[in-house]
Image (cartoon, rainbow, N blue to C red; front, side, top):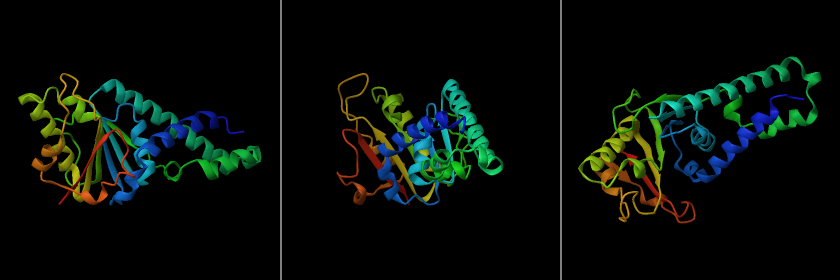
Length: 228
């Protein structure tokens, strides 16, 4: 019996659940398969992104040091359990039950077997981060703009624009910038929020062809733009 299977299986189910919410991202054909998850919190969405895009490299960024520390602790446990399972399957096959072997072959995603683990770093998307220019195939955020916009007064407008420009900066030409935001009114007043002008001001191109009602989840608002 793989002693770490129960924990790994619960984490893999969580990754799968997160990935299923955004599985339509696979249709963007992200190249290179390198992703940045802004506002990653404790990293669950980052793992979902890696699974959906089959990413070979990923980084999660959040401004809260406590969230980043929790993400790193979780990553450490996952990495250790994967490595322990590999040692068991390599050197102690006689101690591995057939159902454990089948679980490893059919349920553990390839990116974990490849050790394509994400990195997590502290950073504020409204400020320049340490991420390189023109590096990622996808810059992604979920419910981030909604939380930093305030009332979209002068300061809120500046912060939203800075966040989108930072996401655009780190993406390669031809890469994607995607934001998923709630359709409900802002946190501080009743105005419905529309972030389209901010993406346009960042020099990003709206790709209308991917706006298919069957693919895009509701009732969230999805912004899909490409860096030219």
